[in-house]
Amino acid sequence: ELKVEQNPLFLSMQEGKNYTIYCNYSTTSDRLYWYRQDPGKSLESLFVLLSNGAVKQEGRLMASLDTKARLSTLHITAAVHDLSATYFCAVMEYGNKLVFGAGTILRVKS
Amino acid sequence: NAGVTQTPKFRVLKTGQSMTLLCAQDMNHEYMYWYRQDPGMGLRLIHYSVGEGTTAKGEVPDGYNVSRLKKQNFLLGLESAAPSQTSVYFCASSRTGLYEQFFGPGTRLTVL
Image (tube, rainbow over all chains, first blue to last red):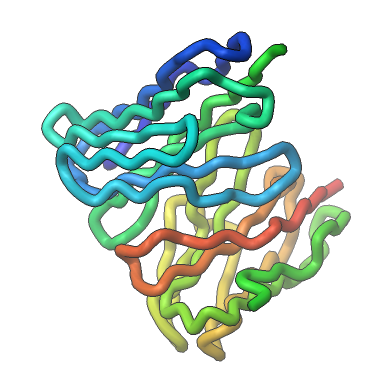
């Protein structure tokens, strides 16, 4: 059974600082997705990582995937208040189903 | 394009009542999914469908039924609601199972 663990679960950071969210998973998969959720809203797709070594960047966010280590990272560069949200990683398991992590609540303080 | 829509947005039920949640997508996607989101637990898959007329169980299917009579619609039914089914329900769709999923706005359900 695939397990997906995110850490930290809560992150409070100052504007302008850098930080990384980690997503570990327990069984082999080569497809990983990052989503963002604002309070009371739906999930918005951020990144789709499809192979070992994949790296995607959008603005101040950069995601990477290491399938051998079963690890994905979401790196935040020079955080701004607008990045405050909950971030989920989700891993594709056998049968084309997604298993989600518990989410990381990010609060960026000015 | 409206994307993925869900009806209703909010609902309050009494224990034992039944209801149906409707999900509709206009992207001609083959796959559709129902999730529930509870605090601190991420999203958990209830049921999914890989095409019109097909359904399959996800991680937490007990107490729910689904139907996919038309490609664009996916219905989630609660036959006898229980307080443990208080949650936010999200519908999603994808072109196939390998593509990213697009989510609807959610339905907040409270069972008293």
